[in-house]
Image (cartoon, rainbow, N blue to C red; front, top):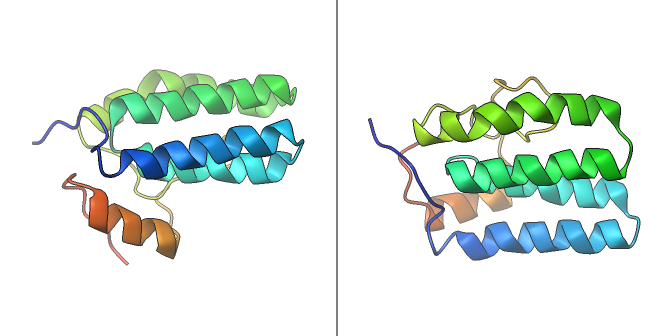
Length: 129
């Protein structure tokens, strides 16, 4: 078993870009776009406990800022458990991380993110298409 810790330096700029876009679009009150960027950051950061937990923290804050009770309640267990699952390499590949999807459901990874992950990731999680 391989333990993942931090996001690879070559993948981090893509992860950070999605977080920045989430913040920028939120500021412009483009909430759906903002959320989509958080989901994309989640997909990129999910195998790495610190990045994974950080995105769930941002999703929790999004829930508070938009007064979305379902998201707030849904993010609390994800925030508590998500990083641990990443640490031991047991994650549902492609899951977007929101309370609107089951926390253990695997999902298809968008093609552009799949290309980025395959090129810049060093984790051993099998990505199937």
